[in-house]
Length: 158
Image (tube, rainbow, N blue to C red):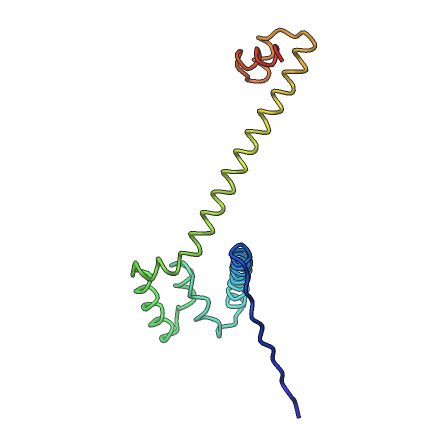
């Protein structure tokens, strides 16, 4: 005889902990679903037709045609999926997570670009400072670093 036991836990996190828990669970769910979708489509393309319904859930039009081709029931299903994809409320609901991920990537990319610019600026200031110490002409330093005369003069006086 098997005895199954379960435990119930009650968590009372503070607001910051709750946000962190939600972020962690949300990220984990997104990553799991992302790779699960790839695995399902790979299985379907390798001949496992039992996964056709699942494979259609986020297929683009070309994939949808391939998946449903030749199966009367799947073709009816395809019509319903296409109908739903034309429904604005449904597509907004289904794409909210996708849009959040695109926004996150865009913000990360913008932050990375800004960080690179700041790093380049700091490096140019450091190089300019060393060249000024060596007595190099300010016009040459301006050409080499892209810094303005005002910025170089401020370095020169420090």
